[in-house]
Image (tube, rainbow, N blue to C red; front, side, top):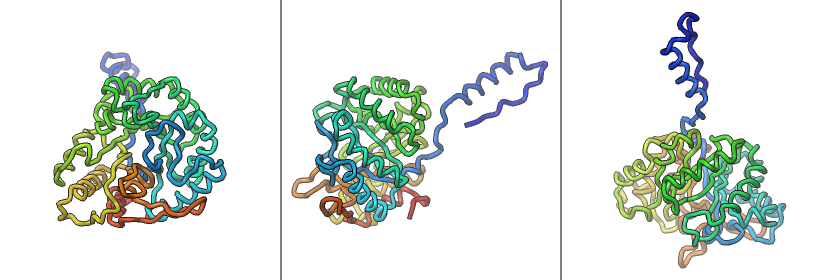
Length: 349
C-alpha cells in the first residue's frame, strides 16, 4: 500500500500538527500490506493415507517410500492433472515434518512441490507435529527450526510457495502461539508476509488472536471448521459459528481445512435437507463466497481411514491405479458444486 505524503507548506512543516500527521502516515506506509481478499486460493489438501500426524516421513496417498524424485514427479503430475480436470484447483496444501525434511525422502518429496509450482499451482507447505502424541506442540524446536531453514532456503524465492509454520497449534495458549509465530516471522525476514499463513489458535478455529496481534500484520491466517468441533447446528447456527471464529479477519483468512462425507450419498444441493453435514457445508461455502475467502478442502485425497472404507470418507476425490498410472474420480458431484460455489464466480472452470 502506497500512501503519498501530502505537500507541506514550508512555513508550517515543523508545526506539531504536521509532524504528527507525517508520523502517522509514515507508519501506514511502513506497515505490511494486507490482502483485500483471499479468493485467489482455490484448492484441496493432498494427505497421507491415515492422516499427516506421523512419527516418520510423510508418504502422501499414491506415493511409496521407495519412489525416487522422477517417480514422485510423475505421480504428482497425474494427481494434479486429476485435481485440475475434476475440481479446477489452483492451490494444493501439502504437509511437511522434521522426519521428512531431514531424511533422504526430502530429495524425492520435493518432486511433489516442484510438480505443483511448475504447473502454476500455489503450494501451501504446512508443518504437522511429529506424531499424534505431540499434543499440538512442537516437540523438538531445534529440529523444527532446522526444517524450516531448509524449506525456506529451497523455496523462499518461489512466489508460488507459501509457508504455514504449524498446523493446528492446539497445545499452546493464544499468547504462546502468537509469540511463537512472531518469532518464526522474525527468523525468516526474507519470506514475504503475504506468503505466510499463521494458524488460528486452538485447532486453527479461532482467527481473532492472530488477527489482533500487530506483530503478525500482513500475514494470512489459516482457519479450520468441522462439524466435530461443534456438534449439531442448523444452517443459521453454522453461519454464526463460522463468523464467530473468524471475527473481522476474513480479508486475511483462508479456510485451509473443512470437509464433509463425500461417499455416503448426501445431496449438498438440497437446501431443504435437515442433515447436519449438508447444512454445515452449505453454510460454510455460502459465507466464504460472501466474504471472498479462499479455501483448501480436506482432503482432496488421503486422510483418515474410515472404518470399513479404503480412505477418508471426506475425500472429495478417489484415487485409483498403481505406479505412475494414477487417476482421480469424483464420488459426489454435489459436494464439488458446493466447493466451487464457495470459491465464487472467479473460480477457474
